Length: 378
Ligand code: DCP
Ligand code: MG
Image 1 (tube, rainbow, N blue to C red):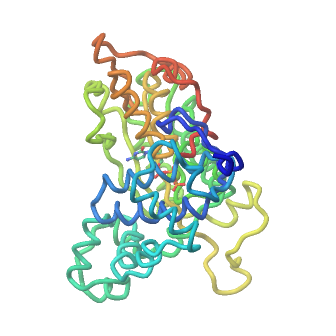
Image 2 (cartoon, rainbow, N blue to C red; image 1 turned 120 degrees about the vertical axis):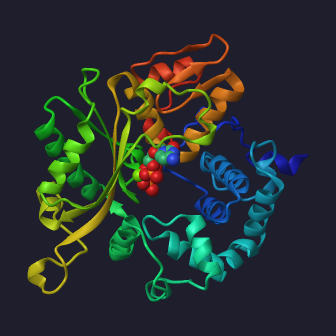
């Protein structure tokens, strides 16, 4: 039909790991709406719905033009009935009634505030809500027993819920570099997570640490943590043995190496001075001389240590985005009969582990074009 010739129709591969998703997004109105519904589903223990909304949003993120007409969406993958209804509502009425009512709902607002406390997940928040706790004041008044993480989360709530800038991430990076160089010369620190993908802000800062000689990284995390603690950089830390045991990780589990893979969840105390040293001149925080306000902020930092033999897998697995990671594993499992984790890639047909020393090699093993970190923002 003639009128359709004027509408651009898009074509998009169905797995996010087959696509290049930069931070440039022409459809933020639509993707913000779908992301909010995804978040609401995730906070309500409806993981399947959450993933469906995330996948739909990710498809819209790669479109070269703003969507103006439903006909442009014909043939696109991952757009279910529900997502299409939300998009249609926004295109026709300027807003989605479901998104607006979700945003206004007491339950969603309470879930957001309570899970904003570091150490509080959706399950705990849900239990508190059922006990009548909807905000931080009610939480404080309730005399709930809080664990150490949650106490730190409550104490530093405002700081932790304020986005971390790239300048702050770099300042933290210098501190981590110094710590690592002091306790194990030759060990390497790599910025991972959202900042490696080129994001200008994030909810935390993530680092991957390794040593070029296999085995030298054993026992490294406690030493790094001790150094940081002795220098007064840590407001909170909890070191765990490998916690990357996701249910859909399949059999890709090199068990002998498991206990070498450590993670530290921490809250850093970042001085405004440290930030200036790292090259930032302006700050939203008043300096101490301006009177009153504290001259530091709390920042969530995650540290991961990996043996060099698993480094490429850890790098790929911790760079994200979360949806990109999920799609990589789904691609591996469903299209290649392989199991991918942040430790290894296992070929279930050949019954062998596939070695890799770079992310490029892993994409090649998976039969995928290489996608650089800046294009993994699905
Ligand atoms: N990751 C994952 N699954 C987990 C934990 C982490 O796939 N259970 C990976 C993907 C993430 C990366 O680790 O991108 C870092 O996790 P973050 O939650 O810090 O996510 P980002 O760094 O991408 O986003 P933000 O900017 O909010 O920190
Ligand atoms: Mg992060």
